[in-house]
Length: 201
Image (tube, rainbow, N blue to C red; front, side, top):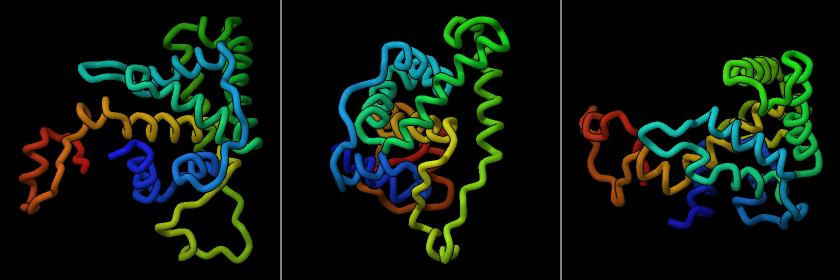
């Protein structure tokens, strides 16, 4: 299956993708909003963040799977102006807080310091409450996903890393069990045969 189609299917399954840029890029509906790429410094930060989210262990990590390039493509070319502004602002804020709290740039801070900074961003993101649009009911949202360009930096980052990673060949061939033609399911038999890995087909 082509990665674009796999990603499009993933959007339907997730039913919670909040980025209009991801929807445009993966559904083929609409053109790119910009051209170019992230700065070298921003790319380096994204590399480190990807490694923090999904490090290399006995299976490939997010960097091995090319997730930083996926993030660069989506943020630079497909995100809306507002989404790009929030994401790049988050990268700058990581540096600002690192300088403020540790007197170094984010990439120069220790692993423990970087982890604490990212945890603080996660805590901030957990407090975010999307604006409820007038006339929108629960039935309008369930199973359809919503577009909210104002989601915080950490939420955008997590969405990009997880979707970017779990739709790569590296992840699907090591983190998941591929079943070309799903067969009969009998209790927990499939789970035991997969050694706890998620199935994909």
